[in-house]
Amino acid sequence: MLYMGRRAREAARELALASTAAKNAALEAMAARIEAGASKIIEANAQELEAARAKGRDGAFLDRLMLNEARIAAMACGLREVAALADPVGQVMARWTRPNGLEISRVRVPLGVIGIIYESRPNVTADAAALCLKSGNAVILRSGSESFLTSLVIANNLSEALVASGLPEAAIQLVPTVDRSAVGFMLGGLGGAIDVIVPRGGKDLVARVQEEARVPVFAHLEGVCHVYVHAAADLDMAKQIVLNAKLRRTGICGAAETLLVDRGAAATQLAPLVEMLIEAGCEVRGDPETQRADSRVKVASEEDWAKEFLDAIIAVKVVDGLDDAIDHIARYGSQHTDAIVTEDKNAAEQFLARVDSAIVLHNASTQFGDGGEFGMGGEIGIATGRFHARGPVGVEQLTTFKYIVRGQGQTRP
Image (tube, rainbow, N blue to C red; front, side, top):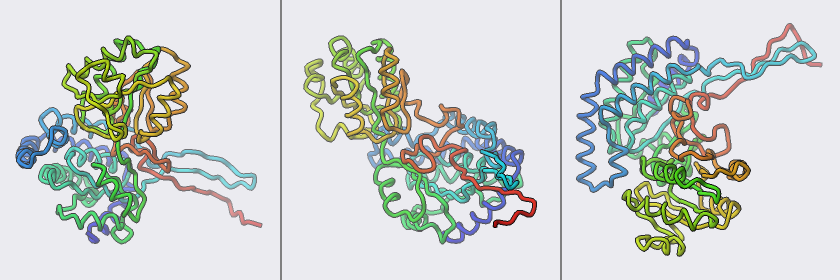
């Protein structure tokens, strides 16, 4: 592990000076290798899916683990989208001249070496590698045990493309073991080699990383996302947004977990929304008013309001207006992604200003809380903290800056 760290640090120094053209050529080559190796990726993935089913893994886990031709094509497309992004490295963020003639510039530079620890999503291997490469960072990837074989095949394709493109092979390294001790080494920073850790996985993993890491962390614990149907919501729009937010993909962090319905809309909108969800195969757990609206609704416990189900389950509650909705989100939410559905622009602006989440939306599904949907060419996670990066972590968020000062012999009196 320490050797991997040293190699990554050396590669990071080289990558920091790599031209945009060289990085883009490598990304294009990586996309081509992924497409050419699709059959081997699917073969490895099929073995892991079979093993996961044998262990009784649920549908949400299997969905995160599964790769097919369409998802592999999307991986390759994502690599090319990252290649098409503007290169953040070297961008001048600000420039000014002091009265003494000193010219000062604030310039974007890579973070250095990024450690990414992820569990069941093998596509993270390509997504994270692409974003780190474009932003001039070396990356050490640690896959979960149940997606290791698939991740290894993907990583090998990426490494072959790097070498063929003339960039350092150690710029993208996959930890060659599923031993949990490897995570501990990474959290310790590998002797100062790792500059930041990004966990991509469940609550237990993220909690461990945040507790034990000796280097900065980009992370969110959970995606307890809300859709608030305001009194001035259009019912057809609300139905479309709620259905998509909850059921498009239930296992992602941007999936809605709680539906809040304004008391002013409950008489006309609560029952249709609940019926729609249940008929679509979603279990609804609700407060007493929601239970009265449909006899199929189960009782919501106190724990359900703060729960990330990652499944076809949603908690539904009637709230007393905008203030009550915002208070509920502040109490039970995870500051990830929250949405309001309303035709009242004033209410929408209040919601957008007062809800303290990394992503807030008006009249749109919470499943848009994604770097790719933001035009960022993907992301390596949604950061819900307040330092350095917040929301989707893309190429720009994977840089820091330094000050460059140019003088003509000035000395300080």
